[in-house]
Length: 266
Image 1 (cartoon, one colour):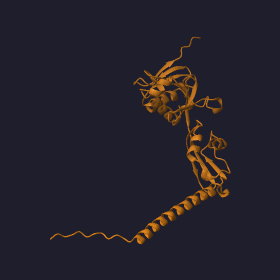
Image 2 (cartoon, one colour; image 1 turned 180 degrees about the vertical axis):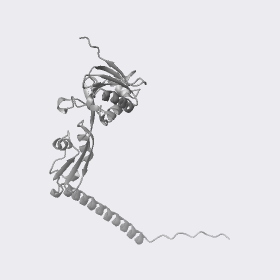
Image 3 (tube, one colour; image 1 turned 60 degrees about the vertical axis):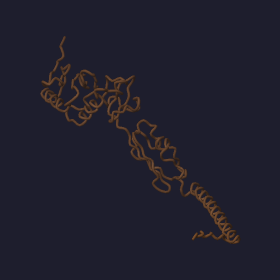
Image 4 (tube, one colour; image 1 turned 90 degrees about the vertical axis):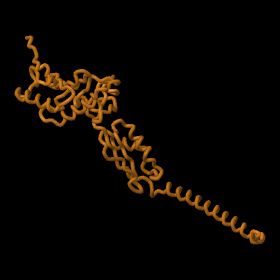
């Protein structure tokens, strides 16, 4: 016996029409509601970004030294009275980094009407002679040409023997060695960084320092700086701490301290 498939009954036209109208009505209502929401959002945003209650009243700057507060604020582009929601803090930070003394900076909103600028300045550790005198920080970054207003002449040792190419490639790691020597000298009592006027870098001989007093050359090599300087200290102690009459000192020979005295031609 053949079984006939059930035929799907067709809804009456009136019911189908009412369903169509209902669906269209819901769509129109949703579209209108969305338009009101968008319009309301735009209006609310405009109200917030023009509200006098959100105008910047305080700009706090911390960590500044060589970079003045006024300069940091000027570079940031942030102005008192400006709406705090319209400030681009990333752009403001990038602008402040335009000052070479700024190693890092963070700009953030700290309230409805206040902004904080947190600066981390570079710490100069030496002057370095390339095509002129430049300033090097404790990380080994050469970040600016030295200027009289920096007040670093005579305050920091001068590194010589580098070229821009050698400083960039540095296959022997002499930059790192130089920074290590400076760090050790800074932390020493007795003969220390204040007694050094120049650090000479040589790819074959290593590092040599020149003293402020008497201009004595001291060959220190590229390693075991602390031990070598301790040995030098003993010799200086025996001489009352004086370099007088000494032309050069070699503490990079593996045998101790070798002193070369000046020749009296008088």
